[in-house]
Image (cartoon, rainbow over all chains, first blue to last red; front, side, top):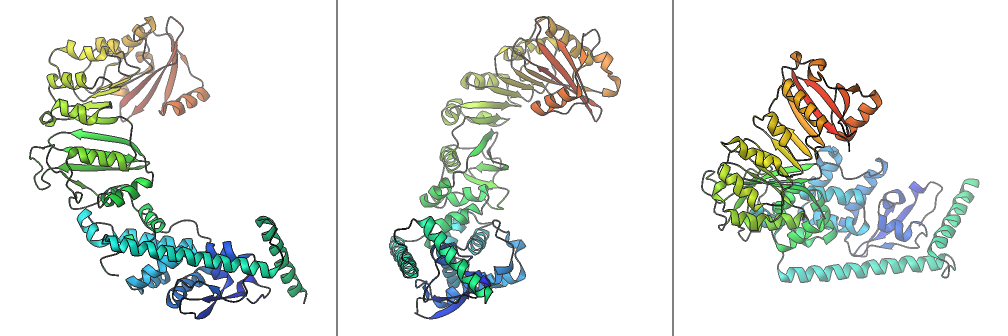
Amino acid sequence: MTSPASSSEVKYLIESSEGNTFDVSGAALRQSNTFNAMFLNIGADGPIPFTDYNEATLKKVFEYCEHSVNEENYSGPKHQDDLSKWDLNFFNEMDQKMFIDVINASNFLDIERLTSYCCERIARMLRGKNTQEMIKVITLPTAEELEAKQKVEEKKAAAAKKVAEKAAETAEKTETLEELPVQQLVQTTRNKLTRKYLSFSNE
Amino acid sequence: MELAFPLFRLPENVIVQVLQNMNPDRLLIISLVSTKTKSLVTSLGLKARNIYIAFYHEVSINVNIERFGWNLMLRNDPNDQNAEFDITRPVSASCLCLDKPFQPSTPFNFNDWLDHILTVFCYTKPIDVEFEPGSEQFEMEWLKNTLKNVDFATIGGVTGIRTKEILKNFKDLNELFLRNNPFEDSCEVQKLFIENFKAIIFNDVYSLDDMLLANSEIVNFRRPTTHKQFNRFVKHWIRGSNPRLQCMSHRINNSDSVSREVLLKGINCFDVAEEEQQEICQTHGIISDDMVKIRRKDGTPAVIATKDFENILHIRFLVFY
């Protein structure tokens, strides 16, 4: 992780399921509540492993985050009719597989704005359909599919655990803080980062 | 994007978020897809504020959730609006949000529909019902068993015999709205006024005797009366009539011809201060141009609030115990 004076210029390395890495701005990444909870205050040495998602999906998700960096703070779901041309293009150019991957990744990363727009888009897809038509559209899963889904969710939980472990490991490296309570740990890290930024501005 | 969308392959919290983007009428439709969707929609915890069922040659169910309300028309044959309703046969529904009828994957009869709606929208309060011409086809015993506890009933255009039958079978009724007087003999309707319903709304011609016999807390006479009849009623009330009355509504046509002096002739009254008027209007949700206070002989205060609108004088008689 680099640490320039302006936080928007901070870049983080993201690792995808293929093992590829690419960088994302801190401002974009901060739209992910998952990231905020795990890395924001303690930083990360080396790439952040979001290895349950492929590079194309993660790049698509962070493309959205980079674009919405300068938008006003998220204040609840926005009607599809109110979406900007850029937003509409963003959604329209995805095929269904990519759309589903993006929802899953956005949900894991807890990016409220993107997840909410995706959900509103699906709800819109179901409008004007009676029960029989809905059954056709939402293609109810078979028992096998349900089992497979459970396995995927278990895998995701394991991935999340791995990310959390990585975050904890990084925290340990940063300072010997094991015995500090969480609040104090966050405060200490904040103080440390503030000192760091101050020293940069003094230079 | 393709027409089919594998909604159930998404994590459950995402599915819930998708459902939260749907209006209650669409949620009802999706809740009919499977037991899974039913349970997901129920888990949203949407609580119906009120459910109103109208019986006539078909059945309509009006569901109100927060500020959202919609009407569901139930028919055995969606293409035949005049076919007799068979409660045992599958029923399909239609509503304004959809230009085609819908039914669950496993066909529902009327009872199944009602159970489903009550469950999905967490409704446990008594149901409000309406009986209109054509509702005679529904057997009273079945209605009683299906609707169980009814709080408010509207009866209109059915015979006096049927009206009595309805009232006999729904004994816990709190509020009654008679769209018209179903009885030929005027004494019959007076028997209903004497009953101690919490509220009664009457939309037919009424006499001073009817007004004086009204034993409900809230009485709403929808048809116009005369200023003389109202004036005489107030004088009787001062002397002690209608001991349970809390609120009575009237209207008088041609308000231009009714001055305050004429309306309150011979009644000892005094003006209500502006501030108190505003407070009363706010508490009772009324609009008033003029408000006077009176007292009955035992000291009970009441106000007469009037509002002139489109040449009709709307009167609200409010008693404060």
